[in-house]
Image (cartoon, rainbow, N blue to C red; front, side):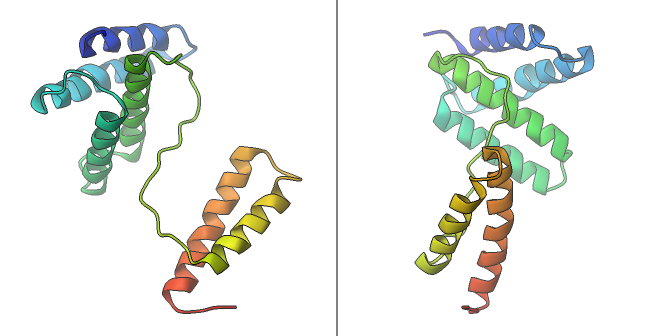
Length: 152
């Protein structure tokens, strides 16, 4: 298995092969070398797999919420971490939108059923990415009305 530093270089090579600006490539280099590698060294990680990536991204989300850096920086760090985890797992590196599972409120069966029916309806008209966006908005609303004991 390759080391974290070897995997970082592999990810940087991949990033340089896609159409990104020089400044974007530089930012990813900084995130990988000046944020993720020190994080791994501090936590004595010998690999950076999905569990380590999840812990790192949760820490970055907390730091963003504490105002330590911008939302853009947080998103770039999460993407860099996901690419590194993919590389260390031996998965093919793909430059695509990544979805990060965040702890969300579980809805009661009633509202989950409504969401499932709506998702099926939307599938007739929208692409999967747009469906996720619509469902996310509706789920937020359902969480609000459920937390306020409103049932239709």
